[in-house]
Image 1: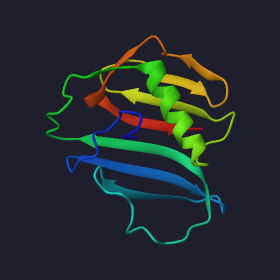
Image 2 (image 1 turned 135 degrees about the vertical axis):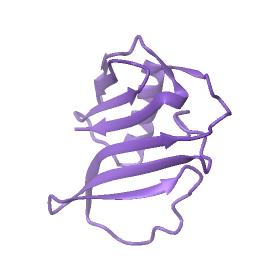
Image 3 (image 1 turned 30 degrees about the horizontal axis):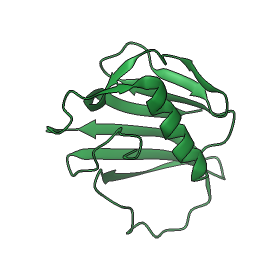
Image 4 (image 1 turned 180 degrees about the vertical axis):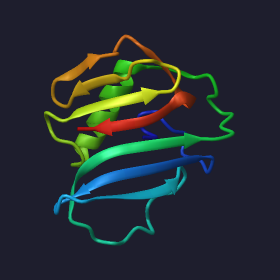
Length: 130
């Protein structure tokens, strides 16, 4: 998320990740934006990501920063695919509370809608993976 410029990686951001287990059940983990995940040592039977919810409070740096929706989507999906968290064909959508439509596309194919949008960084609040 930080590498794609979606978050600043500070204590004023909360990231809640919902993921699917191999047995079909969902689970989630939550952490502040500045958490490196080093304390998460539990082994899980991970099948895939489902959703990432973002909460940002009192984030003054980059307050009005605008992001190119297509570039942000491409960067995010490339990073997550490189980590083995996404596969070709999965639909990924980035939602922002200041836009009526998300930027969406399929991994391996590219952005299919909303790529012409500009995202205000502080308003990005959800990413879904289908």
